[in-house]
Image 1 (tube, rainbow, N blue to C red):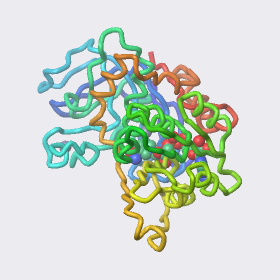
Image 2: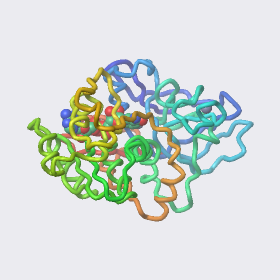
Image 3: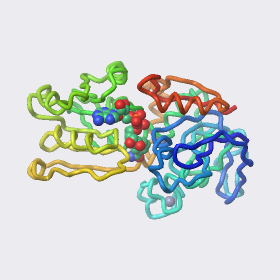
Image 4: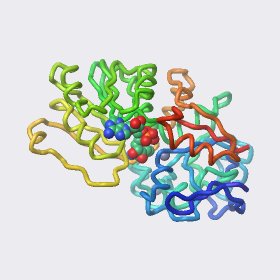
Length: 346
Ligand SMILES: NC(=O)c1ccc[n+]([C@@H]2O[C@H](COP(=O)([O-])OP(=O)(O)OC[C@H]3O[C@@H](n4cnc5c(N)ncnc54)[C@H](O)[C@@H]3O)[C@@H](O)[C@H]2O)c1
Ligand SMILES: [Zn+2]
Ligand SMILES: [Zn+2]
């Protein structure tokens, strides 16, 4: 089968690989129909994710059809259409029992990281009964690809951890797919204001179309002052960090209102200063989280009710044969205006 293989920093290739096999009775082999590329795949290609070793098939998002089931699998049968979660969960360990699937002691974020992933014709999904979701009849499979990772991430790490409330003010720093997913799902709670901050005017324009009440281009280095002026000097109740660099986490510290929450989503590769000299008396909460994908069943319901249109995030489509072009397009978003790219594997 064809698969996109990580070959070390800045190196990848579309290679011929053997078909995955059932390794445990709880495994399912899925024939991938649609997958996508995540910002985290680009982090891997930069060499930022040492747990992912050369030779690994990348990808942790997608939908497909059940091809083979392990002996212990009763919830799925060959031919079933399934959504693949980016998080594999055994469902039994101490963290799974607390619904912290991301910290599953034998699972978590392993797909396309420590085991072969979804950017291939077939993928082995461990703990399939608690890591796959049946696709409802008539569901739009492209939209569902957005539920593997980015919508649960924006919602759980940004909106839920950030305690977005009706009438509150929210700022989202970073208008990439994750920040935009937070923007879409924050609106479940009717905040009064959602201010998006980015360096890319195209993405800020998209954010306006997705429901942002205001946008700030932070290229001039004055985003904090601009936001404080916009909010009458108060700052925001929720500041969501969706970039993953020191400058943006520091910006969140500068714009959070007393009693507010900084909800970090970004994957940080370097240390960041914590400004307790200005925050110690402000009753703020800082949260961090690796997506658990516990909200996936709820997001599937919302999708079915047409209250959310994740297809808005899809800008480009490619065949698996063209996945190297898909990476080029996705990696140069400022020029290509890419958000999420769909890769058809069948
Ligand atoms: N916590 C989790 O479980 C989890 C899951 C998935 C992704 N992530 C992380 O979320 C982050 C966002 O992911 P993404 O796919 O949207 O990334 P992305 O790179 O597509 O988007 C980042 C956005 O930040 C903007 N940006 C860069 N520097 C900026 C600055 N100084 N000020 C303002 N904006 C700036 C960019 O223009 C871009 O639009 C990444 O760090 C990713 O690794 C975390
Ligand atoms: Zn991801
Ligand atoms: Zn577990």
